[in-house]
Image (cartoon, rainbow, N blue to C red):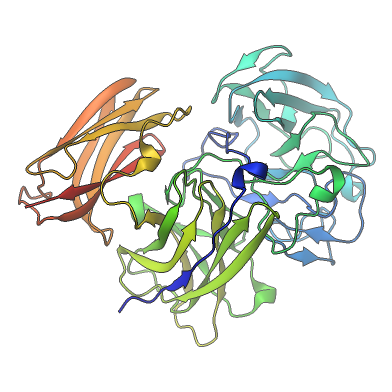
Length: 475
């Protein structure tokens, strides 16, 4: 029996305030586990260094008032009062990358905050690079870089170019990247901050940042409608007991010990799709088997009212031991175009839950009103590295051909799944040069047996990007 909740939420005027996501990648060279977690957040209450007001407002609307100042605050949860960016902790010397095209407007070792937050002693001048991103109104800032800085003022950079290297210069005790986004100007104002949160604002009340200069925090990362736990539309926040497992969608997932006490909660993550097409969507989650998963986890579904800047929040309790190794629908909702919804999962479980761990893996947003091609992937003029250009014929019998384009040479693999997420056919990785390519499927499974008629998903994976199309096999 299907156990999901239906939401009917229609919002208009999205493009009046909505910001099209433009950040293509995370701003660092990937570790072997693909993403670093985030330890320190943007303080939405007052994101200005050296001004503390005893309130710390997080991206999910949670307000905290105790132990808010670095280095004594609870990293990943309540750290820290007045912080204007997000902090990725990583080894010294990690290459820091441009997450989107732009040009360099600042590149220098400059005096940092005085005094440093929490009263720590500065470690010399701060290595700082600032990029302008034309056409977006945003500026990205990179702090605590060690020598040498790899980009000079006036240079044009492309996504993935090395800007510098992670360090602990300035007000830093441990190597990390302070990544900050400013709206309308690159200028640092100690009284009225220009900083916004690139991970958006998902509170049920208006974003406090907007009261400073009228700037609203939006999710700025390019995404997709199927988000694995290591993709651009996913972010995991710091917790002391994360464990990465070699099972799940695309062969990995994360787990954290479950708790029924919100005061002891230390692990959470967010998924945000980029939905270029409006309509009714199923929210599907993928849970691998054999992980002693909890039977009553709580998914938080947020839908943004982009006219007001607030979100409606709904809780969905789900048994992660049911229908494992497949996608399962937990909610259905009607959405306008744009990346205006999110799912947050924490390590908190409902009373009476059995199982030791909460599992964090892929989430899929399936447009139930589209039978045939996923228009989200077709002929949109974007800067994405992977695009599906055409699918023919569709519906098909006996074979279907998919034309796709990659802008960089990558290892490419193709996976075909059914509506439950069960793998039907996998074509192993083959190195492809940049340009147009085609893949043909003859309607067979991994054993060469013809499959029955019905709706299938064909996913093309190139590097860390995934594009998926719906294909219909007819008898």
